[in-house]
Length: 107
Image 1 (cartoon, helix red, strand yellow):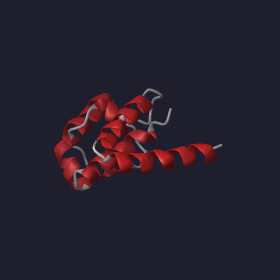
Image 2 (cartoon, rainbow, N blue to C red; image 1 turned 90 degrees about the vertical axis):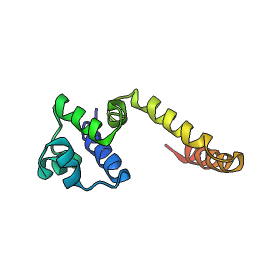
Image 3 (cartoon, rainbow, N blue to C red; image 1 turned 30 degrees about the vertical axis):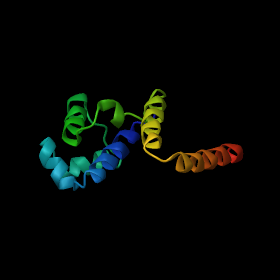
């Protein structure tokens, strides 16, 4: 179980929303230092704090836990499927070819 993934996911969604750490800290009533420590995986937030992050970032808790548990891969698959649906059939086929190549060369 990789709990530091929580911080990486918080950082990912914070940067997607174009928020600085200071702005996220203000939205969650936490210190900027604490936000940075969580994002670097130095601290694991308590449940109440974790939920503050999810609310401030307007994401579900499972999105922040996606790389922490095995079932997170199901969520990732769903998110990827949503992205693929928006592409043209030709672009989708290119991506499938890349994935097939990567699978063939993986250990």
